[in-house]
Image (tube, rainbow, N blue to C red; front, side):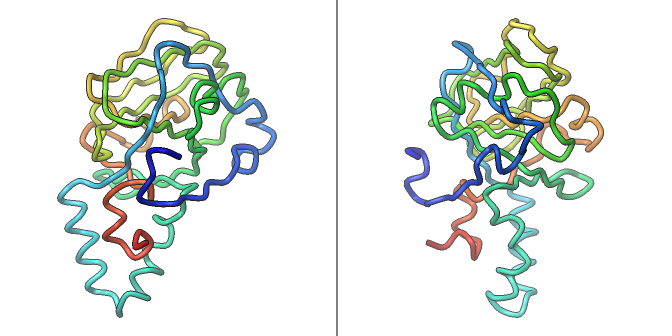
Length: 205
């Protein structure tokens, strides 16, 4: 995994994460989404909050235990105004995975999604070719900060969905989830693939 030279990350297979409902788990984004590499980091305010939590624990062991959910490569948390919102995810980290996406998936649990990782930030557009379910698309910058959200992308619609000029990551969720969970622009994605985790116990390599 070229983008993650700093870290070695094991990610459960898509089949293991989603089982039968996502047997056809990946969707073709075609020419509108060349290759995604996602960076998940944390905003300055959230950094301060996590830092306090670590210092208040009883040493590094306590901090490691409290951060255990954040260290799971099959989980992403979104830091919102209402608190952290966790999702089980499939990480699209190869060209084939990124190109197929959630193609032909008939249904997906509300607490699951797919994370696309870009090699570097740049202009990004997605489409919904061969996609059976409506989706929310969350676009982030290199810090994991949400810069745009496209809600309720229409199945099979091949109209390009532009995320921005400097997009580094995309999280796809079921349509309506971003509204229901109060996920907004400026919120932050957390995942062990990103630079912030070098300061957490699970990120020390």
